Length: 382
Image (cartoon, rainbow, N blue to C red; front, side, top):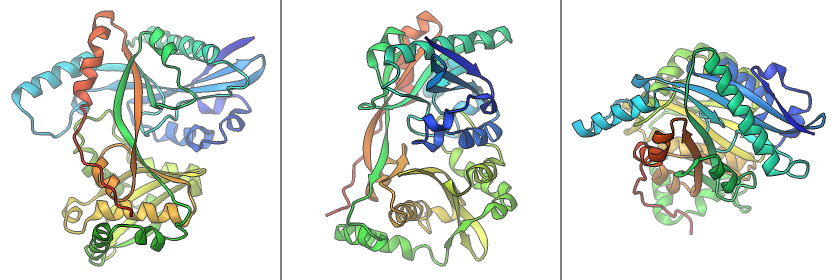
């Protein structure tokens, strides 16, 4: 018998959860506990466990996200017409949305099922029933769900079933690609990586290193992260506030909580100039894949010292020297990420508005909010 249960705390999920998802740190209980504690204030979590008889065979992470007008569109200079359109769109989406997946991280880190023990049809039937039940619970407590979103799928993802999603009246939307660098077998160390570059990109690498001008990169331990929580948050906001569209703000203690729960699977690297923290980046060690996470910097040093580019190189160095198969640079800033060796991999999302009329035009609305950007892919290797 196929059935499901819903849990409102990761502490209540059944035994066997971690065994089922041992391949993905971002689906395991340590990570999800950290996310629960240090979640943005507008995000709360639900967990769906799918069972065949008494055996857990699939899971889904569902996030309730409350969107606020002031947080959706940030500090950008646009025309009066675009401002009006953005305000109109924000009002249509303002309120609660349900995300099957993880809004705080790029990639398909929301569902998993054992394809040898349950069919896609049976699994997704339970997931959609579970999402409907979560929607009813929220409605009974005075909330209203406006949008349902399934994110992020690679087009060749074995978990993907386009026909099942379309039968649920979900729109398929192509979003910005995930930028991923596969680590070559011949890269035993960072020097091998640099030597594989074309002369132009090798020169660029050396120039970026020189422009650091005394700024040093050092890993931060738990105590250092806690002591610098406010400064880390401020540096993160310097980057986050420049995003055209954003759905959340991380809390001040986010990186400290992640380090405390994920331990060696979460790394924070600080950039110091004369002992002053002027930038940082974070990494999640996800088995064979190195996942880049949030970063921040003092804008005064960003251009002058090429902090962002140096961070991308430092991420590559860590991934190579620790023998990861790939470095997941995530979406955004595709051109500069391609210049260090990342390649775009197409991703899709599925979404629907709970209002039938609005759902018919939702695809066009989402395209406006997530426009395709023209960019030039770089090819740094010989």
